[in-house]
Image (cartoon, rainbow, N blue to C red; front, side, top):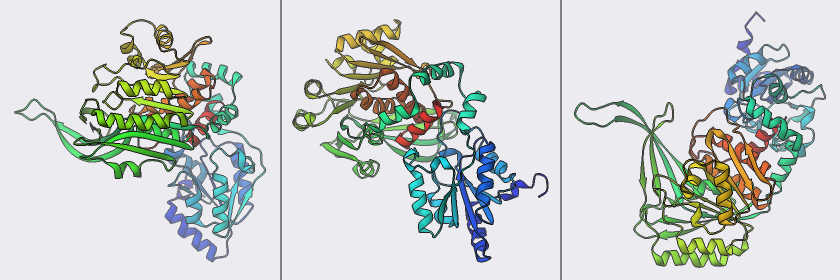
Length: 511
């Protein structure tokens, strides 16, 4: 191989499938390895050399950047650099960048004789993704077999954490202290223990629409911005997003919300709810399901302006009474009732009283936004077991612009007789408070922000079941900021926060 010819080993998946087909016709044994290979180290070299010994030709496929999901700053090297680096290894014959998050579809396409994984995957119960079981079933289905190497192992993540400036000094200091008190396996087991919680989610359905458009300038005769339409993307937001986040941690999620009869969007909504979310919808006559259209520059995801479709009034009395009657009989059946109150009229005073009185464990967010003008403070709830709001919301609720956040958190908890509160503070992280044990502060773990929309909802959805199970407030703040970091790397509510993402991110941070 000539110097720098190694990039010629890199093929598309379709090209690689044809190459393998030809090799098999010639009687060659094809071996397949798959992974991230973010930081190539001696363990990888030994693993690939051992894999090559299993056959005649070794092909390696890479997890694409979009599916790496190992935390801030990952992958360090983009997929093209990782592919070319693998191509420089003598034992590797061909390299391709995968299209999917796991190797299952790749194995079906390539149909190798042997699929090789490292010894760390030999115990399926220790695989965070659960993918090794499905990969083994797939390789057997296409007539091949799974082989494990038994070579020296290292962790790319651990090496990067120790020797690269992946984290800020603030995050590194926090993690050094946190790791002395908690391990990744401990936290992951606690999160897995949330599966049996029965959760009821109550709140407003919101359809988020991003109308991508390019600004082209100001018309000469009008004081407006002229834009050119590009495309539209629609998301299940509001309480729908919360329910989907929760469904990744809890098996039984029941959703109660209200749609409009004029344009219910119900078909779209049902297609975008997870299978373990059971919806109960009520319907308001002569009204629209809430839609928030944001006009967005597609290159930078910067929002130009927003157009909201909502009445801004409380629900009619008869409809409110229907919802009241349903909730009155339903609330006692659930371990956790999570209320996401966007202040658009769904949750009136009578429902607030009922939720506070009959919920076994009540978690609440009352949002302050441009559509409710600050008339939706968390303090409209006389009690809650857990509240999760941002700094602006607590300042509006307490009518206090300048006092320290910790003072406000303590004051609102005392007023609402709350067991625990979290105040999220954007790039300043979050503050958790619990009477008797004080405060816990957690820095942010995100290295890049794609879109902030829905980050607070993800934080609430992941931490509420943790609070219901009375997990330590430090763990609660840590897990919440992990969920927030995952969420801000996603456009709006394009995908919910999944348990596997959480587990991988937590493992990365605590290695």
